[in-house]
Amino acid sequence: MSSSTVSIVQTARTLGLMTAKRAAGFVTRLLPIPQPSLLVGPDSSLRLAEAIGDFGHRKILFVTDAVVTKLGLARPMIEALEARGSKVAVFDQVLPDAPIPVIEEGIARFEAEHCDAIVAFGGGSVMDAAKVIGLAAANGRHPRDLVGYFRGRRGPAPLYAVPTTAGTGSEVTVAAVISDPEQHRKYVVADTRIVPRMAALDPKLMIGLPPEITAATGMDALTHAVEAFIGLWGTPTTDRLALSATSMVFEYLPRAYDRGDDLEAREKMALAATYAGMAFTRANVGYVHAIAHQLGGLYHTPHGLANAIVLPHVLRALLPQAAPKLAVLAERVGRAGRKTKLEDRALAFIKAVEAMNERLGIPRTLAALRAEDIPALARAAAHEADFNYPVPRVLSLEEIEAILRALLPDAAPTARAGTRTRRRSAQAPGTYSALP
Ligand SMILES: NC(=O)c1ccc[n+]([C@@H]2O[C@H](COP(=O)([O-])OP(=O)(O)OC[C@H]3O[C@@H](n4cnc5c(N)ncnc54)[C@H](O)[C@@H]3O)[C@@H](O)[C@H]2O)c1
Ligand SMILES: [Fe+2]
View (tube, rainbow, N blue to C red):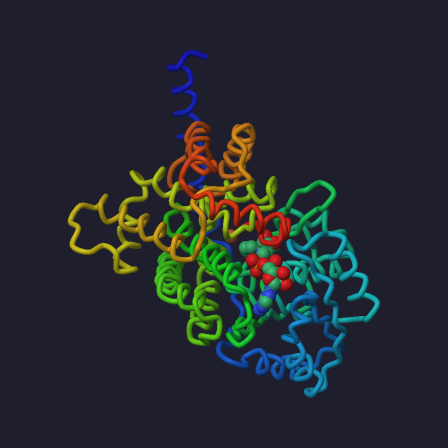
C-alpha cells in the first residue's frame, strides 16, 4: 500500500471507531449499575459481619487465599460471623489472577456445603473468584461459559466483599477477571448482578501489605481514575469520583508506601480505589490497560506495575486530545502552578505521574520486554482498545509500537530498577497481572 492509501485507511478506521465508541457511550449511560452499601473505617469488616448475621443466611462460603489466612487477617471476621449465628465454610485456595481450576473447586464447595451467600475477603483475585463462584453456581454453568457480558440467566447468591488491597476496586465493579492457566489467557466476566451487596473498607487489614504491592495496586487505582476521566464515556458523577480518587492517591499513596501502619493513609487509599472502581465500572479504561494487559499476559508483569510504567507514555501520546482534562487533573493535584498555557498545565500532570513513579521506586522501563515481541504486543493492544475502550483518540499501530519501544530496557538508564522488575515477575509469575 502506498503511504497515502495507508493514511486514508487509518483515517477511515479512526473516524469509524470514534463514531462507534461515542454511540456505545450513549447506550452504556442508560445501564443501571447497582452500588453496594459501604462500611468504612477500622473494624468495619466486623460491623459487616454483624449485618450479614442479621440477614439469616443458611451457610456462608467465606472465600479468601492462603496468604491472607496465614497472616491471620480473616480470623476476627469469621469469629464475628459465627458469634452472630452464621454458619461458615472457609475456602482459602484462591490463587493470584483467579485461575479457573480453583474456581471450579470453589463451586464444588459452595454446592457441597449448601451455601446461600458468599463473603469475599482478599485482593482482586479473591473478589473476582468469589463473583464467578456465585454466578456459576446459580446458573449451573462452567466459568468459561460465563466469559463475556451477561452470560448467566440467574444472578448469584448475595455477595459481600472485604478488599485487603487498595487497587482493583472489584468490590464495586461489574467485572470479574479470571485466568486460564492452560491457555495463558485472562478473561472478563461482566454482569451488573455480580456487584457485591455490601462492602467493608477496613484499613486495619491493609497494614501488612508490602510496600511494592501497595505501590503497584495504588497505581492501578490511579490509572483507573485517569483513564475513566480522559475517556469518552465520563459522566459528571464518574468525573467527580475520578478526580477525588486522583487527588487522594497523590496525597496518600506515598504515605501508605512509606509507613504501612498509617491507618489514615490506608483508609484513604481504600476509598480512592473504590471511587476509581465506581468511575471505571461505568466510564471504562483505555490504552494504558490495553497495553498493560499484553505485558501481563506475556511476561507476567504485575498489573499495577505495568500500568504505572505505561501511563505517562500513553498520556503524552494523547496530549493533543486530552490536554483540557489533563490540565484539570494537574490543578486538582496542585501541580498546575501559575502556568497559563493549557498544554503546559497538562504536561505538568504527566510529569507529576512520572515523579510519583520515581517516588515509589517504579522503574521507567520493563526488563522483560523484547524488541521482537513489540509488533504482536501492539496488535493485541490495538485490538483490545478498538473493541472495548472509549479512548480519546484511536492510536495507530505505529504509535503503540513507539510507546512500547520506549519501555525497552536500554531506552532509559534504569538498569537497577529494571532488574527489580525482572526479579519480581520471576518470583511470582502472574501475581499482579490484571484485567482490567
Ligand atoms: N474485577 C475488577 O473490576 C478488577 C479490576 C482490576 C483488577 N482485577 C483483577 O484483580 C486481580 C489482582 O488483584 P490485586 O491487585 O488486589 O492482587 P491479588 O488479589 O492477586 O493479591 C496480590 C497478593 O497480595 C496478597 N495480599 C492480599 N491482601 C494482602 C494483605 N492485606 N496483606 C498482605 N498480603 C496481601 C495476596 O495473597 C496476593 O499474594 C487480577 O486478577 C486482576 O485482573 C479485577
Ligand atoms: Fe487495572
